[in-house]
Each structure stands twice: as structure tokens, then as C-alpha cells.
Amino acid sequence: MSKTTSNSKGSPSPERARIGREVAARLDANPNVRRAKVDLAQVYTYPDFLSDADCDTLIALIDSNSRPSTLLAATDDPDYRTSDSSDLYRWAPDVQAIDDRIADLLGIPPENAETMQGQRYAPNQQFRAHCDYFHETSGYWDKMVETGGQRTWTAMAYLNHVEEGGATWFPRAGIRFKPKRGLLVIWNNMAADGSPNYDTLHEGMRVVEGTKYIITKWFRESAWIKAPIQTYRSGVVDADAD
Ligand SMILES: O=C(O)CCC(=O)C(=O)O
Ligand SMILES: [Fe+2]
Image (cartoon, rainbow, N blue to C red; front, top):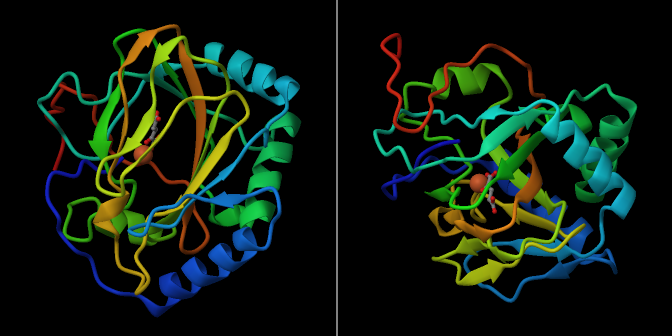
């Protein structure tokens, strides 16, 4: 994930602007989806998008396959992103079915989505405020252009009830979601002109009690191609980084 500490604007893009309008129109027309009452970003929710069986399957996959979460940019803050992550193999039938449902809900080709990522937060773990889009001035940007370009929409679902903490907070847009099993939260990381929208800054707040499980899907502006990408762990600076 891109670590955001400043409001560095990327460039406008008619293509990303079009994706923003088309996905929003599709979501607005879906009776199961509600637009959040915020002006600064396009944020939507779909309660009970995942069934209990879907959630249990995904939790089991996450538990069987987790590693410490990483970042796209180095940070010396060991507390920045402390969860565990797992890449959920997209051709596993259970994963593919959910992948396809999310892509169809948004009306974005499934091949534009990165591998679905599962995340697990134990008590005290968190993902500090960040934006999901990539920074066009960063060292990793050329690699991102080769692998499908900018991230446009994010779809994130909670897989379980969390006793306390673990809300997803958008401090600039002014909205906070409490984890609720099966709830899908969807937002456009781009502004109306297709440039990155800093008002989508969000944080996975510290879990106080219980364990939090989520899945996240990040959609690119064009087809995503898997390629090795240098990533970093919070507080661990890799000597090979460039
Ligand atoms: O854990 C959360 O609530 C937020 C996760 C998140 O921001 C992400 O996966 O990009
Ligand atoms: Fe995020």
C-alpha cells in the first residue's frame, strides 16, 4: 500500500474519470447498495454481501496462509501496518466466485483486480492512515504502470464481528465503519477528474479486543499483470530497496 504523508496530487485522467462515473452509476442503480452521506469521496456499502459460509471459508484460507503485511514504500514506523496478510489464490473456486461477484457488482473486468488480499489483525494491530492509490512520483510508479496502472476502486469486506476496535475510519471524508460480518465497503480512490483523491485517506483502527478479518480487492485502471514488486515491512528497511 502506498504510504501517504502528504497531499501530493497525481494527474487527472479522462479514463479514470470515466471508470469513476460508470461504477458509481452502476452502484447507484443497485437496490442493495447505499451511498454514504459524504461529499468528499464516493463511498458505498452493501450489507450482508458475503454469506456466513463465504466468511468462514475466507477466514480459514487467511489462517492457513498468512505472513506479515507489507508496504510499497519503506517506513521506519514499526507500528504503521502491523497486520498479517495473505494472497488468496484467485483460481481456487471459492475465491474466484467471490472475486467475480465483486467485479460484477462494480462492473469492472475481473482481470483489472489485483489478487484478493486477506488481512488479519490481532489485538493492538492496525493499519495507520494511508491512501490506496499509488503516488506517480514514487520509485515504484513505473512498475505499477506496467502492471495495470493506477488503483481506482477498492472493495473491502469484513468477515467477522470484532469485540472492540478495528473500525475503518476516513478522517478527511468524515465517516467510520464498524466491522460487521459480511458488510462490503466500496470506495473510489480517484476524484471526479480521475486524479488521486486525498480525501479517501483511511485507517484500519487498532483492534482492542478480538481478531479482525477482512478481504480487500484493489482494482487497477487496466488489466493487472502479476509481477514481482519490492515491498517493505513496517519498521524493516530492506537494504536492496531503490
Ligand atoms: O483494515 C481496515 O479497516 C482497512 C484496510 C485497508 O485500508 C486496506 O486494506 O487497504
Ligand atoms: Fe487501504
